[in-house]
Length: 509
Image 1 (tube, one colour):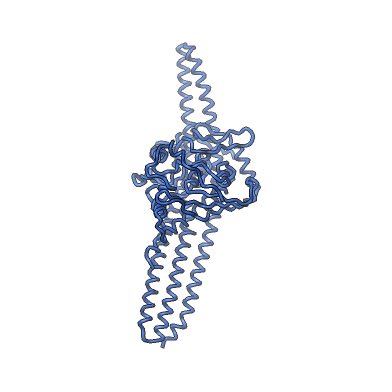
Image 2 (tube, one colour):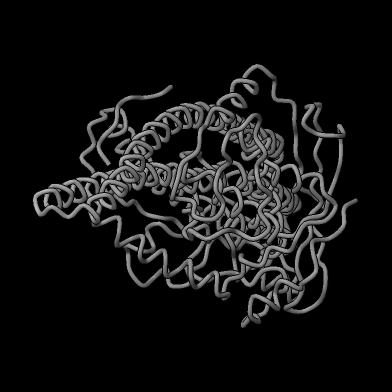
Protein backbone atom coordinates (compact mmCIF):
# COMPACT_ATOMS: atom_id res chain seq x y z
CA UNK A 1 0.00 0.00 0.00
CA UNK A 2 1.47 3.30 -1.08
CA UNK A 3 2.55 5.82 1.51
CA UNK A 4 0.88 8.53 -0.50
CA UNK A 5 -2.47 7.04 0.34
CA UNK A 6 -1.75 7.51 4.03
CA UNK A 7 -0.86 11.19 3.92
CA UNK A 8 -3.25 13.42 5.86
CA UNK A 9 -5.35 15.72 3.74
CA UNK A 10 -3.98 19.19 3.20
CA UNK A 11 -5.12 21.38 6.03
CA UNK A 12 -4.10 24.99 5.71
CA UNK A 13 -1.42 26.94 4.00
CA UNK A 14 0.25 30.27 4.32
CA UNK A 15 -0.76 31.09 0.78
CA UNK A 16 -4.05 32.12 -0.69
CA UNK A 17 -5.72 29.80 -3.07
CA UNK A 18 -6.07 30.72 -6.72
CA UNK A 19 -9.69 29.59 -6.84
CA UNK A 20 -12.03 28.87 -9.64
CA UNK A 21 -9.77 29.42 -12.56
CA UNK A 22 -8.54 32.82 -11.43
CA UNK A 23 -5.43 34.25 -12.97
CA UNK A 24 -2.29 34.53 -10.90
CA UNK A 25 -2.12 38.20 -11.88
CA UNK A 26 -5.73 39.20 -12.52
CA UNK A 27 -6.76 42.04 -14.79
CA UNK A 28 -8.11 45.29 -13.35
CA UNK A 29 -11.49 45.23 -11.66
CA UNK A 30 -13.30 46.54 -14.72
CA UNK A 31 -12.18 43.53 -16.70
CA UNK A 32 -13.06 41.11 -13.94
CA UNK A 33 -16.59 42.45 -13.70
CA UNK A 34 -17.26 41.14 -17.18
CA UNK A 35 -16.58 37.54 -16.22
CA UNK A 36 -19.46 35.11 -16.56
CA UNK A 37 -21.82 34.48 -13.70
CA UNK A 38 -22.20 31.27 -11.77
CA UNK A 39 -23.37 28.11 -13.37
CA UNK A 40 -27.08 27.68 -14.08
CA UNK A 41 -29.03 25.52 -11.67
CA UNK A 42 -30.17 21.64 -11.82
CA UNK A 43 -32.60 43.06 25.93
CA UNK A 44 -31.50 46.39 26.02
CA UNK A 45 -28.45 45.92 28.26
CA UNK A 46 -27.87 49.23 29.91
CA UNK A 47 -24.42 48.17 31.00
CA UNK A 48 -22.41 50.50 28.92
CA UNK A 49 -19.07 52.12 28.98
CA UNK A 50 -18.28 55.28 27.62
CA UNK A 51 -17.29 55.53 24.02
CA UNK A 52 -13.03 54.27 21.16
CA UNK A 53 -12.08 53.02 17.45
CA UNK A 54 -12.10 49.38 17.27
CA UNK A 55 -10.62 47.27 14.69
CA UNK A 56 -11.80 45.86 11.47
CA UNK A 57 -11.48 42.36 10.28
CA UNK A 58 -10.57 40.62 7.14
CA UNK A 59 -12.97 38.25 5.50
CA UNK A 60 -10.09 36.61 3.74
CA UNK A 61 -9.59 33.20 5.35
CA UNK A 62 -5.83 33.32 4.91
CA UNK A 63 -3.11 35.92 4.73
CA UNK A 64 -0.48 35.77 2.02
CA UNK A 65 2.02 37.15 4.51
CA UNK A 66 0.79 35.23 7.55
CA UNK A 67 4.33 34.43 8.63
CA UNK A 68 5.46 38.05 8.68
CA UNK A 69 4.51 38.82 12.28
CA UNK A 70 2.73 37.00 15.04
CA UNK A 71 0.42 39.96 15.64
CA UNK A 72 -1.00 40.01 12.15
CA UNK A 73 -1.26 36.28 11.66
CA UNK A 74 -3.10 35.94 14.95
CA UNK A 75 -6.31 37.11 13.32
CA UNK A 76 -5.70 35.32 10.13
CA UNK A 77 -6.71 32.47 8.58
CA UNK A 78 -9.73 31.76 10.74
CA UNK A 79 -10.85 35.36 11.33
CA UNK A 80 -13.54 35.42 8.73
CA UNK A 81 -14.40 39.01 9.24
CA UNK A 82 -14.59 41.82 6.80
CA UNK A 83 -11.81 44.37 6.99
CA UNK A 84 -12.87 46.80 4.38
CA UNK A 85 -15.30 49.63 5.12
CA UNK A 86 -16.23 49.64 1.45
CA UNK A 87 -19.13 47.80 -0.08
CA UNK A 88 -19.02 44.19 -1.15
CA UNK A 89 -19.93 43.51 -4.76
CA UNK A 90 -23.45 42.67 -5.77
CA UNK A 91 -24.95 42.86 -2.29
CA UNK A 92 -28.69 42.49 -2.23
CA UNK A 93 -30.11 45.11 0.17
CA UNK A 94 -32.31 44.10 3.07
CA UNK A 95 -35.94 45.19 2.89
CA UNK A 96 -37.21 45.02 6.47
CA UNK A 97 -40.80 45.60 7.51
CA UNK A 98 -42.21 49.07 8.27
CA UNK A 99 -39.77 51.94 8.15
CA UNK A 100 -36.75 50.42 9.80
CA UNK A 101 -33.44 51.60 8.42
CA UNK A 102 -31.51 48.84 6.75
CA UNK A 103 -27.93 47.77 7.56
CA UNK A 104 -25.60 50.00 5.64
CA UNK A 105 -23.52 48.50 2.92
CA UNK A 106 -21.30 51.46 2.14
CA UNK A 107 -19.74 53.03 5.21
CA UNK A 108 -20.68 50.29 7.58
CA UNK A 109 -19.43 52.11 10.66
CA UNK A 110 -20.99 55.55 10.37
CA UNK A 111 -24.47 54.99 11.75
CA UNK A 112 -26.24 52.14 13.42
CA UNK A 113 -29.83 51.34 12.59
CA UNK A 114 -32.85 50.35 14.60
CA UNK A 115 -32.84 46.61 15.26
CA UNK A 116 -36.54 46.15 15.89
CA UNK A 117 -37.02 44.28 12.61
CA UNK A 118 -34.23 41.81 13.45
CA UNK A 119 -35.66 41.29 16.93
CA UNK A 120 -39.02 40.54 15.33
CA UNK A 121 -37.39 38.05 12.98
CA UNK A 122 -35.64 36.29 15.89
CA UNK A 123 -38.86 36.12 17.93
CA UNK A 124 -40.78 34.81 14.93
CA UNK A 125 -38.12 32.22 14.20
CA UNK A 126 -38.09 31.09 17.84
CA UNK A 127 -41.75 30.22 17.49
CA UNK A 128 -41.17 28.13 14.39
CA UNK A 129 -39.51 24.77 14.30
CA UNK A 130 -36.40 24.65 12.15
CA UNK A 131 -37.21 22.32 9.28
CA UNK A 132 -34.42 22.63 6.77
CA UNK A 133 -31.57 20.54 5.44
CA UNK A 134 -28.94 21.59 2.94
CA UNK A 135 -26.63 19.12 1.24
CA UNK A 136 -23.59 19.89 -0.90
CA UNK A 137 -22.90 17.04 -3.29
CA UNK A 138 -21.64 16.01 -6.72
CA UNK A 139 -18.35 17.96 -6.86
CA UNK A 140 -17.56 18.41 -10.52
CA UNK A 141 -14.44 19.75 -12.17
CA UNK A 142 -15.26 22.35 -14.84
CA UNK A 143 -12.61 23.41 -17.33
CA UNK A 144 -9.00 22.37 -17.76
CA UNK A 145 -5.65 23.37 -16.36
CA UNK A 146 -5.29 26.33 -14.02
CA UNK A 147 -8.56 27.78 -15.32
CA UNK A 148 -10.47 24.82 -13.93
CA UNK A 149 -12.71 25.08 -10.89
CA UNK A 150 -14.98 22.83 -8.84
CA UNK A 151 -18.74 23.17 -9.04
CA UNK A 152 -21.02 21.75 -6.34
CA UNK A 153 -24.69 20.85 -6.30
CA UNK A 154 -26.45 22.62 -3.41
CA UNK A 155 -29.76 20.94 -2.57
CA UNK A 156 -32.23 22.44 -0.10
CA UNK A 157 -35.13 20.53 1.46
CA UNK A 158 -37.49 22.52 3.67
CA UNK A 159 -41.10 23.21 4.54
CA UNK A 160 -40.43 26.78 5.67
CA UNK A 161 -42.69 29.40 4.11
CA UNK A 162 -39.81 31.76 3.29
CA UNK A 163 -38.95 29.50 0.34
CA UNK A 164 -41.06 29.05 -2.78
CA UNK A 165 -40.49 25.30 -3.13
CA UNK A 166 -39.99 22.41 -0.73
CA UNK A 167 -36.96 21.06 -2.57
CA UNK A 168 -34.65 22.74 -5.06
CA UNK A 169 -31.05 22.55 -6.27
CA UNK A 170 -28.52 24.97 -7.73
CA UNK A 171 -24.92 24.75 -8.91
CA UNK A 172 -22.36 26.84 -7.06
CA UNK A 173 -18.59 27.27 -7.25
CA UNK A 174 -16.30 27.88 -4.28
CA UNK A 175 -15.98 31.62 -4.91
CA UNK A 176 -19.77 31.90 -4.63
CA UNK A 177 -19.58 30.67 -1.03
CA UNK A 178 -16.83 33.18 -0.25
CA UNK A 179 -18.88 35.93 -1.90
CA UNK A 180 -21.90 35.07 0.24
CA UNK A 181 -19.85 35.31 3.41
CA UNK A 182 -18.40 38.65 2.32
CA UNK A 183 -21.87 40.11 1.78
CA UNK A 184 -23.21 38.85 5.11
CA UNK A 185 -20.14 40.05 6.98
CA UNK A 186 -20.46 43.58 5.56
CA UNK A 187 -24.11 43.72 6.65
CA UNK A 188 -24.07 42.17 10.09
CA UNK A 189 -20.65 42.05 11.76
CA UNK A 190 -20.52 45.73 12.70
CA UNK A 191 -23.90 45.53 14.46
CA UNK A 192 -22.97 42.54 16.61
CA UNK A 193 -24.20 39.49 14.72
CA UNK A 194 -21.96 36.44 14.60
CA UNK A 195 -21.50 35.51 10.93
CA UNK A 196 -20.22 31.93 10.46
CA UNK A 197 -16.87 31.94 8.62
CA UNK A 198 -16.62 30.34 5.20
CA UNK A 199 -14.19 27.45 4.64
CA UNK A 200 -10.59 28.53 4.17
CA UNK A 201 -8.70 28.40 0.91
CA UNK A 202 -5.95 25.93 0.06
CA UNK A 203 -3.65 26.59 -2.86
CA UNK A 204 -1.96 23.21 -2.52
CA UNK A 205 -5.11 21.11 -2.49
CA UNK A 206 -6.85 23.01 -5.27
CA UNK A 207 -3.78 23.08 -7.50
CA UNK A 208 -3.63 19.28 -7.41
CA UNK A 209 -7.25 19.16 -8.48
CA UNK A 210 -6.78 21.72 -11.24
CA UNK A 211 -3.82 19.96 -12.84
CA UNK A 212 -5.72 16.68 -12.75
CA UNK A 213 -3.56 14.84 -10.24
CA UNK A 214 -6.02 12.29 -8.93
CA UNK A 215 -4.65 10.57 -5.85
CA UNK A 216 -5.84 9.83 -2.36
CA UNK A 217 -4.88 13.25 -1.01
CA UNK A 218 -6.77 15.03 -3.82
CA UNK A 219 -9.88 12.96 -3.18
CA UNK A 220 -9.65 13.68 0.53
CA UNK A 221 -9.26 17.40 -0.18
CA UNK A 222 -12.40 17.48 -2.34
CA UNK A 223 -14.39 15.54 0.26
CA UNK A 224 -13.09 17.73 3.07
CA UNK A 225 -14.12 20.87 1.22
CA UNK A 226 -17.54 19.49 0.29
CA UNK A 227 -18.34 18.70 3.91
CA UNK A 228 -16.97 22.07 5.08
CA UNK A 229 -19.20 23.93 2.61
CA UNK A 230 -22.20 21.92 3.77
CA UNK A 231 -21.51 22.70 7.42
CA UNK A 232 -21.00 26.38 6.56
CA UNK A 233 -24.39 26.67 4.87
CA UNK A 234 -26.18 24.82 7.67
CA UNK A 235 -24.65 27.11 10.32
CA UNK A 236 -25.66 30.15 8.28
CA UNK A 237 -29.30 29.16 7.78
CA UNK A 238 -29.65 28.15 11.44
CA UNK A 239 -29.19 31.83 12.30
CA UNK A 240 -32.72 33.32 12.42
CA UNK A 241 -31.63 36.64 10.90
CA UNK A 242 -29.22 35.34 8.28
CA UNK A 243 -31.74 32.74 7.11
CA UNK A 244 -34.08 35.46 5.81
CA UNK A 245 -31.39 37.64 4.30
CA UNK A 246 -32.03 38.29 0.58
CA UNK A 247 -28.49 37.23 -0.37
CA UNK A 248 -28.92 33.88 1.40
CA UNK A 249 -32.23 33.27 -0.33
CA UNK A 250 -30.72 34.21 -3.67
CA UNK A 251 -27.74 31.93 -3.09
CA UNK A 252 -29.96 28.94 -2.35
CA UNK A 253 -32.69 29.53 -4.94
CA UNK A 254 -31.40 31.50 -7.93
CA UNK A 255 -30.16 29.58 -10.92
CA UNK A 256 -27.48 32.20 -11.55
CA UNK A 257 -25.42 34.50 -9.34
CA UNK A 258 -23.28 37.54 -10.15
CA UNK A 259 -19.65 36.49 -10.26
CA UNK A 260 -17.85 37.14 -6.96
CA UNK A 261 -14.61 38.89 -7.95
CA UNK A 262 -13.40 40.26 -4.59
CA UNK A 263 -12.49 36.76 -3.34
CA UNK A 264 -9.36 36.46 -5.48
CA UNK A 265 -6.07 35.98 -3.69
CA UNK A 266 -3.90 38.42 -5.63
CA UNK A 267 -6.52 41.02 -6.54
CA UNK A 268 -6.60 44.69 -5.59
CA UNK A 269 -9.36 43.89 -3.07
CA UNK A 270 -7.22 41.14 -1.57
CA UNK A 271 -4.21 43.44 -1.22
CA UNK A 272 -6.42 46.12 0.35
CA UNK A 273 -7.67 43.58 2.89
CA UNK A 274 -4.10 42.74 3.84
CA UNK A 275 -3.26 46.42 4.35
CA UNK A 276 -6.40 46.97 6.40
CA UNK A 277 -5.60 43.86 8.39
CA UNK A 278 -2.20 45.19 9.37
CA UNK A 279 -3.78 48.52 10.32
CA UNK A 280 -6.36 46.65 12.35
CA UNK A 281 -3.65 44.91 14.38
CA UNK A 282 -2.07 48.28 15.15
CA UNK A 283 -5.40 49.91 16.09
CA UNK A 284 -6.25 47.09 18.48
CA UNK A 285 -3.08 47.79 20.40
CA UNK A 286 -3.87 51.52 20.70
CA UNK A 287 -7.51 51.22 21.84
CA UNK A 288 -7.84 50.90 25.61
CA UNK A 289 -11.43 50.39 26.70
CA UNK A 290 -12.26 50.66 30.38
CA UNK A 291 -14.77 47.82 30.55
CA UNK A 292 -17.36 48.42 33.27
CA UNK A 293 -19.68 45.56 32.29
CA UNK A 294 -18.56 42.45 34.18
CA UNK A 295 -20.44 40.18 31.77
CA UNK A 296 -18.47 41.35 28.74
CA UNK A 297 -15.18 41.23 30.62
CA UNK A 298 -15.88 37.67 31.74
CA UNK A 299 -17.00 36.52 28.28
CA UNK A 300 -14.02 38.00 26.50
CA UNK A 301 -11.66 36.19 28.86
CA UNK A 302 -13.71 33.01 28.43
CA UNK A 303 -13.44 33.07 24.65
CA UNK A 304 -9.73 33.88 24.74
CA UNK A 305 -9.09 30.83 26.93
CA UNK A 306 -11.45 28.70 24.86
CA UNK A 307 -9.62 29.68 21.69
CA UNK A 308 -6.26 28.63 23.13
CA UNK A 309 -7.51 25.27 24.37
CA UNK A 310 -9.40 24.49 21.16
CA UNK A 311 -6.28 25.14 19.10
CA UNK A 312 -4.23 22.85 21.34
CA UNK A 313 -6.80 20.05 21.15
CA UNK A 314 -7.12 20.51 17.39
CA UNK A 315 -3.37 20.10 16.97
CA UNK A 316 -3.43 16.98 19.17
CA UNK A 317 -6.23 15.38 17.16
CA UNK A 318 -4.44 16.12 13.89
CA UNK A 319 -1.37 14.36 15.32
CA UNK A 320 -3.60 11.43 16.28
CA UNK A 321 -4.91 11.24 12.71
CA UNK A 322 -1.34 11.10 11.40
CA UNK A 323 -0.48 8.40 13.95
CA UNK A 324 -3.42 6.23 12.89
CA UNK A 325 -2.46 6.60 9.24
CA UNK A 326 1.11 5.56 10.04
CA UNK A 327 -0.24 2.66 12.07
CA UNK A 328 -2.31 1.62 9.06
CA UNK A 329 0.75 1.67 6.80
CA UNK A 330 2.79 -0.38 9.25
CA UNK A 331 -0.05 -2.85 9.72
CA UNK A 332 -0.28 -3.35 5.95
CA UNK A 333 3.46 -3.98 5.77
CA UNK A 334 3.18 -6.46 8.64
CA UNK A 335 0.36 -8.30 6.82
CA UNK A 336 2.41 -8.53 3.65
CA UNK A 337 5.44 -9.87 5.49
CA UNK A 338 3.33 -12.44 7.37
CA UNK A 339 1.81 -13.63 4.09
CA UNK A 340 5.23 -14.06 2.47
CA UNK A 341 6.50 -15.97 5.48
CA UNK A 342 3.46 -18.25 5.36
CA UNK A 343 4.16 -19.06 1.72
CA UNK A 344 7.75 -19.99 2.60
CA UNK A 345 6.82 -22.14 5.58
CA UNK A 346 6.92 -25.93 5.13
CA UNK A 347 4.91 -26.71 8.24
CA UNK A 348 1.31 -26.87 7.04
CA UNK A 349 -0.47 -25.76 10.21
CA UNK A 350 2.01 -22.94 10.83
CA UNK A 351 1.83 -21.84 7.21
CA UNK A 352 -1.97 -21.72 7.36
CA UNK A 353 -1.89 -19.79 10.65
CA UNK A 354 0.53 -17.23 9.22
CA UNK A 355 -1.60 -16.78 6.12
CA UNK A 356 -4.71 -16.23 8.21
CA UNK A 357 -2.78 -13.84 10.45
CA UNK A 358 -1.93 -11.84 7.34
CA UNK A 359 -5.61 -11.73 6.39
CA UNK A 360 -6.56 -10.52 9.87
CA UNK A 361 -3.91 -7.79 9.74
CA UNK A 362 -5.22 -6.63 6.36
CA UNK A 363 -8.68 -6.26 7.88
CA UNK A 364 -7.20 -4.40 10.85
CA UNK A 365 -5.36 -2.14 8.42
CA UNK A 366 -8.73 -1.11 6.97
CA UNK A 367 -10.08 -0.53 10.48
CA UNK A 368 -7.18 1.84 11.21
CA UNK A 369 -7.90 3.71 7.98
CA UNK A 370 -11.59 4.02 8.83
CA UNK A 371 -10.81 5.20 12.35
CA UNK A 372 -8.32 7.78 11.05
CA UNK A 373 -11.08 9.12 8.78
CA UNK A 374 -13.43 9.18 11.76
CA UNK A 375 -10.88 11.09 13.83
CA UNK A 376 -10.51 13.61 11.03
CA UNK A 377 -13.98 14.13 9.56
CA UNK A 378 -15.83 13.84 12.87
CA UNK A 379 -13.59 15.34 15.54
CA UNK A 380 -10.77 17.29 13.90
CA UNK A 381 -13.06 19.14 11.49
CA UNK A 382 -15.43 20.10 14.32
CA UNK A 383 -12.54 21.57 16.29
CA UNK A 384 -11.23 23.40 13.23
CA UNK A 385 -14.66 24.90 12.59
CA UNK A 386 -14.94 26.14 16.15
CA UNK A 387 -11.47 27.64 16.14
CA UNK A 388 -12.68 29.84 13.27
CA UNK A 389 -16.08 30.42 14.89
CA UNK A 390 -14.49 31.57 18.15
CA UNK A 391 -12.45 34.04 16.11
CA UNK A 392 -15.68 35.36 14.60
CA UNK A 393 -17.20 35.67 18.09
CA UNK A 394 -14.20 37.64 19.31
CA UNK A 395 -14.62 39.77 16.22
CA UNK A 396 -18.04 41.09 17.27
CA UNK A 397 -16.57 42.03 20.66
CA UNK A 398 -13.97 44.07 18.78
CA UNK A 399 -16.71 45.77 16.76
CA UNK A 400 -18.41 46.70 20.03
CA UNK A 401 -15.16 48.28 21.14
CA UNK A 402 -15.02 50.28 17.93
CA UNK A 403 -18.57 51.49 18.48
CA UNK A 404 -17.56 52.59 21.96
CA UNK A 405 -14.52 54.40 20.57
CA UNK A 406 -16.67 56.23 18.02
CA UNK A 407 -19.00 57.38 20.81
CA UNK A 408 -16.03 58.61 22.87
CA UNK A 409 -14.63 60.53 19.91
CA UNK A 410 -17.95 62.32 19.42
CA UNK A 411 -18.03 63.27 23.10
CA UNK A 412 -14.48 64.57 22.91
CA UNK A 413 -15.27 66.72 19.86
CA UNK A 414 -18.44 68.01 21.53
CA UNK A 415 -16.44 69.09 24.57
CA UNK A 416 -13.93 70.92 22.38
CA UNK A 417 -16.71 72.69 20.44
CA UNK A 418 -18.36 73.84 23.68
CA UNK A 419 -15.06 75.23 24.89
CA UNK A 420 -14.65 77.05 21.59
CA UNK A 421 -18.21 78.41 21.88
CA UNK A 422 -17.43 79.82 25.33
CA UNK A 423 -14.39 81.63 23.93
CA UNK A 424 -16.44 83.07 21.04
CA UNK A 425 -19.02 84.39 23.48
CA UNK A 426 -16.29 86.11 25.44
CA UNK A 427 -14.77 87.54 22.27
CA UNK A 428 -18.19 88.84 21.08
CA UNK A 429 -18.12 87.24 17.61
CA UNK A 430 -21.80 86.61 16.74
CA UNK A 431 -21.14 85.45 13.17
CA UNK A 432 -18.91 82.56 14.22
CA UNK A 433 -20.99 81.89 17.33
CA UNK A 434 -24.02 80.76 15.32
CA UNK A 435 -21.86 78.37 13.30
CA UNK A 436 -20.45 76.93 16.53
CA UNK A 437 -23.96 76.43 17.92
CA UNK A 438 -24.97 74.54 14.78
CA UNK A 439 -21.91 72.31 15.03
CA UNK A 440 -22.62 71.64 18.70
CA UNK A 441 -26.18 70.65 17.89
CA UNK A 442 -24.97 68.24 15.25
CA UNK A 443 -22.39 66.72 17.58
CA UNK A 444 -24.98 66.34 20.34
CA UNK A 445 -27.03 64.25 17.94
CA UNK A 446 -23.98 62.13 17.11
CA UNK A 447 -23.24 61.58 20.80
CA UNK A 448 -26.82 60.47 21.46
CA UNK A 449 -26.73 58.17 18.43
CA UNK A 450 -23.36 56.78 19.52
CA UNK A 451 -24.77 55.91 22.93
CA UNK A 452 -27.79 54.21 21.38
CA UNK A 453 -25.55 52.29 18.99
CA UNK A 454 -23.33 51.09 21.81
CA UNK A 455 -26.29 49.95 23.92
CA UNK A 456 -27.82 48.17 20.93
CA UNK A 457 -24.69 46.30 19.88
CA UNK A 458 -24.17 45.27 23.52
CA UNK A 459 -27.70 43.89 23.61
CA UNK A 460 -27.25 42.07 20.32
CA UNK A 461 -23.96 40.49 21.36
CA UNK A 462 -25.50 39.17 24.57
CA UNK A 463 -28.24 37.43 22.59
CA UNK A 464 -25.79 36.17 19.97
CA UNK A 465 -23.41 34.71 22.55
CA UNK A 466 -26.29 32.93 24.29
CA UNK A 467 -27.42 31.41 20.99
CA UNK A 468 -23.84 30.49 20.04
CA UNK A 469 -23.13 28.75 23.35
CA UNK A 470 -26.26 26.60 23.05
CA UNK A 471 -25.32 25.55 19.53
CA UNK A 472 -21.73 24.85 20.57
CA UNK A 473 -22.78 22.52 23.38
CA UNK A 474 -25.23 20.69 21.10
CA UNK A 475 -22.65 20.34 18.32
CA UNK A 476 -20.00 18.92 20.63
CA UNK A 477 -22.47 16.56 22.28
CA UNK A 478 -23.60 15.18 18.92
CA UNK A 479 -20.10 14.76 17.50
CA UNK A 480 -18.58 13.30 20.67
CA UNK A 481 -21.32 10.67 20.81
CA UNK A 482 -20.75 9.75 17.16
CA UNK A 483 -17.00 9.66 17.71
CA UNK A 484 -17.27 7.41 20.78
CA UNK A 485 -19.65 5.10 18.94
CA UNK A 486 -17.15 4.76 16.10
CA UNK A 487 -14.39 3.92 18.60
CA UNK A 488 -16.56 1.28 20.26
CA UNK A 489 -17.44 -0.28 16.90
CA UNK A 490 -13.79 -0.39 15.91
CA UNK A 491 -12.77 -2.13 19.13
CA UNK A 492 -15.65 -4.60 18.88
CA UNK A 493 -14.65 -5.50 15.34
CA UNK A 494 -11.04 -5.97 16.42
CA UNK A 495 -12.14 -8.41 19.11
CA UNK A 496 -14.18 -10.39 16.58
CA UNK A 497 -11.21 -10.68 14.22
CA UNK A 498 -8.85 -11.92 16.93
CA UNK A 499 -11.40 -14.29 18.45
CA UNK A 500 -11.90 -15.86 15.02
CA UNK A 501 -8.15 -16.26 14.53
CA UNK A 502 -7.36 -17.69 18.00
CA UNK A 503 -8.52 -21.27 17.28
CA UNK A 504 -6.29 -21.37 14.22
CA UNK A 505 -3.29 -20.35 16.28
CA UNK A 506 -4.08 -22.98 18.92
CA UNK A 507 -4.30 -25.63 16.19
CA UNK A 508 -0.59 -25.35 15.39
CA UNK A 509 1.08 -28.55 16.47
